[in-house]
Amino acid sequence: MRLGVFALLAAVWLALSGPYTLYGWLIFAFGVVSVAFVWRLYLALERAAGGGFEFFRASAWLRLPRFLVAFAVKVAAANLHVTKLILSPRIELHPRLRRVPASQKTSFGQVLYANFITLTPGTITLDLRDDELLVYALDAESEADVMDGSMDRDVLRIEGASD
Amino acid sequence: MNGALDIATAVLLIAGGLFCIVGGIGLHRFSEFYQRTHAASVTDTAGAGLMLLGLMLQGGLSMVTLKLVLVLAFLLFSSPAIAHALVKAAHGHGLALELEIEDEPGRDGDAAG
Image 1 (cartoon, chains in turn purple, blue):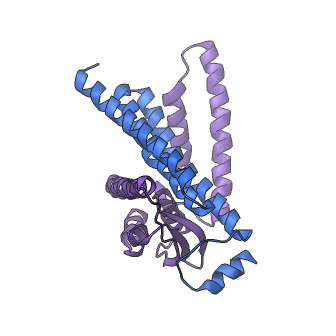
Image 2: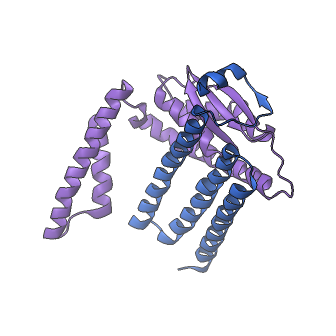
C-alpha cells in the first residue's frame, strides 16, 4: 500500500510533466525529489494516524462514483437552499448547534464525514470528539440534511470498513 | 469547438459566476461570523465547482482536464479544512453563537473555557 502511494504520486507527476529533453530530465529529477518528499510526509502522517488508510483499497475506488453522485446531489441541493436564504428579501435564519453521531470506524472516515458536512452550505462542523460531531446549522431544513443520517451512511459506504 | 459544448460551457461558467456573486452577497447580508462562513461555502462549492466543470468541457479528454479535476479535488479537501479551522478557532476563543436550539449547552461552555 505504501508502494501504491508512491506509484500514484509518480504517475500523476509523469502525466503532468514527463521528460522529453535534457532540461526535461532535470525537471524529472526535481520531480523524483518532490515525490520522495511528499511520500515521506505521507509515511509520517500514516504513523501519526496509527495505521494505513483503507482508501487505497481497490474496493473503495469502485464505490467512489456512487459516493460522488450522492455528494454532488446533496451539495447542489444545499447550495440552492442557502442561495434562497441569501436572496430572500428578509434574512430569516434559525441557527442551531447539534451533536451528531459519527458512526465511521476509522478516523479517516470521520474526517471525511466532517468535511462532507462542512462542504454542504448551511451546515458546518465545529468539533469532533468521542465519535460525535458538533454541527452548526443555519435552519431546520439545513439541519435535516445532517440529522436524517443519510450523509453518515454515504460516508460509511465509501469507508467500507472491514466488510 | 462544437456549438452545443460551447453553450454548455457558457451556461456552467455563468451559473458558477452567479453562485460566486450570491456567496459574496450572503457574506454581507448575514449578520454574524458563523452565518457568514455558510455564505462563503456557496462560493467554494457551487461557484468554483460549476466553473471548473465548464472549463473541463472545453479541455475534453486531455492533460488540461486532468489538472482541472485535481484542482477540484484539492479544493474539496482544503476548503472544508479551512472553514473548520476558522469556526473552531472562533468557537474555541469564545466568540458566541446566536442560537435558537442547542444540544447540551454545558458542552459549549467547556469548549470556550
